[in-house]
Length: 467
Image (cartoon, rainbow, N blue to C red; front, side, top):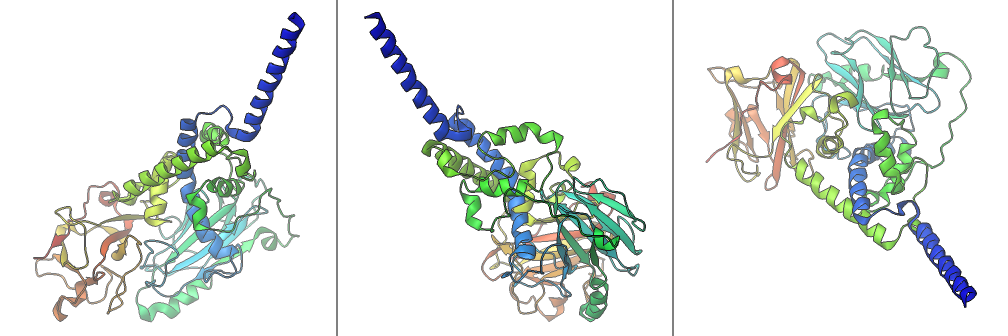
């Protein structure tokens, strides 16, 4: 009898062990984690990866997708536009209309790339903004940071430890091997386009081996290929697969060690493909719940943005605030660090009511209320919720202190008219057209902001509805 009991107990243990083993195999990396924990980690990871995913949208169109209109032929190649943006430009939300772009996606996995810039006239503002895959603005070259003299700058990834070749003015170190470069060059007027084109043609990207006239290094191999960009991927657990592919191109900052360990608990590991068969239906539901919570929080916070100055910058300045980084990507990807340019604006009037194109508004600056800028400032109109430029009969999408024909009041005040129809011929010089029936927002960009602007002493006046 005793032997029978022992035998039955042994069988029971074997069955229990088999069930446990099956459970671990089915749950994969999420074994022994509560559904609430899975949801919390998924929410955190989704917000963490959101700016990387939408940064990759631009990178994919620019350097990988040969069928995209933005495709430039691959990595480390400039695409310059010698004209102001129009409503047809919808790749980037809240696109800048003041300074035509020169954009490039850098891949420094194999070797650094040298950026060469020409001498630029002293009265022309330009900037080269370097954004890593995380969307940190890790370096600047341009009028403010390095001046308007010619220069050569070496851009290196996290693993490069080579010697700096002769003739290099500065080495720029990135935490990631994928980098998006946004160049902006001031366009004074439509008649200035030929001059702009000459400058843009002199922006060069040179692989290090070509610069040093040596053989090309071997290509670095990654476990996962860069994914085809699909909008829906970030609305489902598939976001894990995308994030795992992108994280291969990053280095792990010491401040994120525990964060990455948490992510690994739900399968977020650089270079490891996502396999849904390793997740139980309960786990998938918990991940989907985390995604839904993250989306709701992000959408709520984006609607509250009025001053984006603190949303863009280096890792040190943003202090690993991943929600703010996601808000920045949703509200206006590739915004400048506030020392370079300050952004402000509004989607409501002085009574806190939404700005709607069926109404008429004025934005009045008193003589002493105009922002102080070393270079210039402008106001750009966008529709909501898309945040694209607004089609209008005079093809004016922005207005500012460099706008030709701008009229000031006799006392020095400056009044702008925000409405869909003309405010009258005598006021059209100060008219910024709005959409006819849609809600809208406007963004004010101040280039070379002075201390009062940077430190939030200066305030944007409130928009007044005209009755």
